[in-house]
Length: 393
Image (cartoon, rainbow, N blue to C red; front, side, top):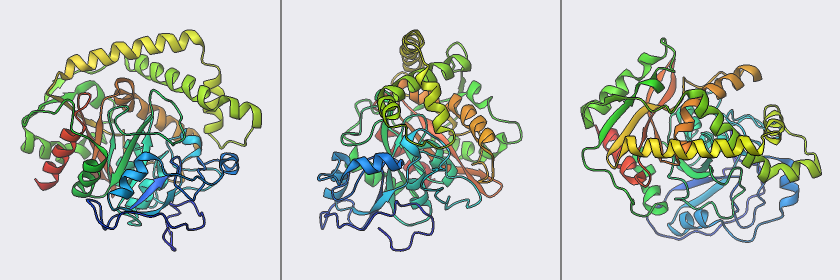
């Protein structure tokens, strides 16, 4: 762990040596690990003091962490996570708000806040995060980083604290496309559904319609770069029924599974939960069986709908987030409104389980803004190859 952590990105655990291979494809790179993953010699705190107190010191590394160590990467430290990974703001009531290295006056986004902070602040080369509802994609957009939500289940989450088993994914951040791809070479096997050399680009006009008119021009340069590299995008619609239907289906599945994961712990020990997190768990407790079943049925219909739209060669080109990161001074109500607006576009990958990579190709008002490529199930490495090609364009 760096002795100097001006970004407050790392949990201040006592430094414990974690062995790594002397050579390998990631040799020379340092990485951070979101404090949901087990690392031998450290506790796993999950962003909550009581979880931390109950953790004990772990004796083995999570398999995904071990893969990175075996590939020659060195651990920089464990990074701050939003509490129980159930937030998207990057402000932990117990451990503070890590600094956005690309826009210090703005939030990092969460829940992989410390990982995004550490990479954007150049305290490490890449970092592991998790993405359930947007917890890699949002901070990647806010902090000017490459970040991926992989195909659901593609990267192991064994020995990591869960939030929602059918939505949780393991992703990562890097500042440049080449380093990002080096990590992919270690964590991802060959694509089960590789894209053709000339994928069919699709522009979901309904999603782009969610963007405020004053913000929309911020992506023009990125869209032109993508068109020059891969050709024009055809307009399409991605919404099934309505954005409201998609939003609530995602929220009900997420809420029910989050309560199934953490509800017994919350009811038995009554931990002090921070603003926003407390209210989300209280809401989640009230999700009914009928709401969950209906939402799960909708999710399956949406997955089939998106699979048919993309086929085996389609890639959506869409905004990662509605705007640049909110200011750190924003109040809880405005942050919650921003989060709920963002969920409407983030839930496309969440409901489908398909991979989405956010690229740091846009910005406004001096702050970064991501644009995303979303492909069919199992096309993760093809999307990363597209990102590398764009970085060279």
